[in-house]
Image 1: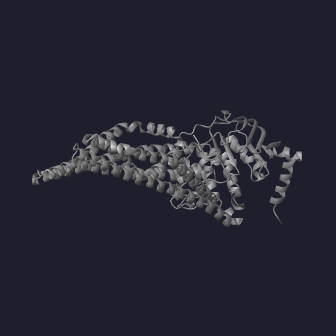
Image 2: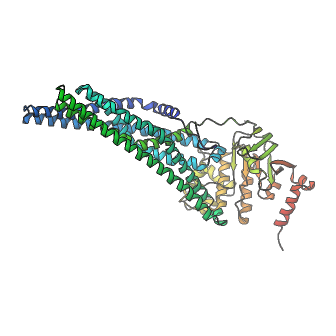
Image 3: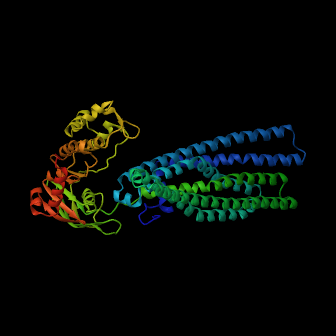
Length: 575
């Protein structure tokens, strides 16, 4: 496999792509065999027309043609056209069905693999790359079907059968066309060598553009807040211009291919005409045979040119297909040094870096007993969120070992509300949960008021285009979902930080209910949350510098004591 950048998602090679397509076709090979047989028969029927016209030409030249002859030839041609058209249509329909069935299976595997990719792998590659493969590339492969399938299926059979027909008329006719075939072969080889890299660069440019647009949309508030609109506009413009440049290069390659095809077409017709003239002059062939040969060549050039005209579409689709299969066949990341630990957590000598940069976690050792709750506090950039991600299994550590429960759930500061009903959002974590269990989870987290505010209760559609939820309500939804999932370890990474002062107490009580009776790790945004935990860990520059209960750390007079004093002063009621 190859990638466009160091951390890009992989792109499957030609052999790997072919092997995966062959594997996916396993349940459709009988249909594909029927396609092959039907295609050969229908193409052979199409030979009747040129041969019948040649026969008629010879009868006219010898003066033996009459009305009966003309009607016989016309009837024969009409029947062959109907049978050939019907056979070709059936071939295309069967091929299209098999194609889309295989594509559907590939799309399902792509989505399934994308949903199981480690988060750190997606983050390093850029979410735009994965989105582009799941949308743009799938569309490119699907849209190629109407043009590529008829061209490939018809041309393959037409070449074989027409060459056989030319040889049956007189072998020099087939030889004349065969002599010119290297022109097409060389054109194809040139295109196959030149086209794929151009199309891969075009697709990569599209991925980059998607990534830049996505980042601008996700960071919309930051862009406005820091006056970065013009800068982001220039970045997106640069990415869009790169797409335009790569697309222009792709169209240039197509134009150069067309020039080569025109040369091949002229040489093919000229070669058959010259051979026909020589054979007729020597008396070894007839004008009718030469006419039939010319018609066969003309009939052959059409599908060949059609195929080569859609080669750019085919190459673009193959480039997209290789990118899709690159994700589907991605090998699993090396197993992270994690093992089950009941419902306790243990880290020993854990270190972690992003892209071989500076240490974010430096020799971290930490234990969380069964049913105990530990808070992690520290300045921004101290490594708190990274520690939570490593414990959750989102990021594998570079060194050291991590033992955690298998059933672990994480709620971060930003939660997503899926497009669907409230019930569907909640039962994502517990598909078999009853409405009663859903309501109990809402009540336990103090979120039952959501139902009163929602027009259709649990059936209220939320998310994109649905009933709007505030940030606090979205967090309540996430905490209730965690209760339904019932994990052994719950990790709250500043999960209530989005709440304003009005909702802070409400969300703190909801988080308390979600953590009750289970092992918990809390990345504390407010020190009041930390003070309520069994133990507190203070982090500085990726290392644990203090550890103990709230009272112990306040008495120690270290960093936590200073933070607590500042927090107490800040939250003290004003008179």
